[in-house]
Every structure is written in structure tokens, then in C-alpha cells.
Length: 138
Image 1: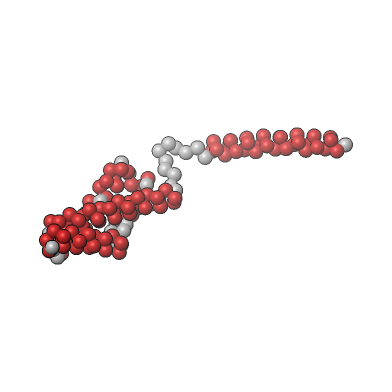
Image 2: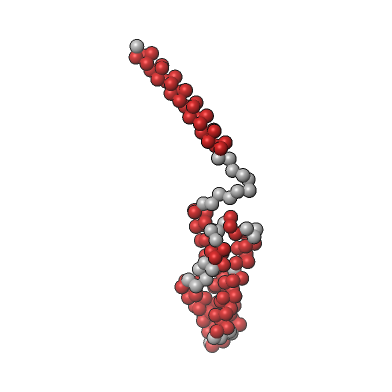
């Protein structure tokens, strides 16, 4: 008797598994996405923002060094900082293929994110002053 119950339980489990797999297939068919649609993932947004931040910091160091070597003083140096940060969006947009909505949550994250962060500004000033002093003072 117990073997019969075990056999019935196992056969019902197989039937339930087949039903579940059919239901899953139906759900997947319903959820099929249009190839032109975009799946937005917060983890990917976070990674993309991190890459953009790294690029901005790198550009800050390069721009600060260049401005220091050129001997720029005063507000011209800060204008060069803003120009370098705005030019930093060009490689980001080129890499995105011009479609930033696929990689960033909004346009301001591409253009304005981390421009006025203390890390970027202080790194710029540090490299600006170091290279200015090395090339023009000492």
C-alpha cells in the first residue's frame, strides 16, 4: 500500500512539474520583449556612473597638469576646469552611441554628475598647483 502511495505521489509530482514548466514557458512567451526595448538595471546604472566618475577624475588630473604647465593663473584655471569637465562628456556619449538613456538614468547624470564634487575640484587644484610650481616657480 505504501508503495502505491509513493508511486502515486511521484507521478503527481511529475505531472505538477510538467504543469509548472508549461506555465513558466507561457509566462516567458508573454514576457518576450521587443528587441528595441531597453531593460533598465540599477546595478548597470551604478557601474556606468562609476566609470564616468573615473573618467572625470582622470580628466581632472590631466587638465590640472596641463593648465599648470601652461602657467594659467586665476579664474582662467577654473574656466579650464569647467571646460575640461564638459568636454569629458564627449567620450561618454561616443561610447554610448549617442543614446545615453540606455546607460544612464537621465541626461544630467551624463553632463553634471560629479562636476562639482570635492574630490574632482581638489584633485584639479592639487595637480594645477604642483605643475605650476614645478614649471614656473622652482
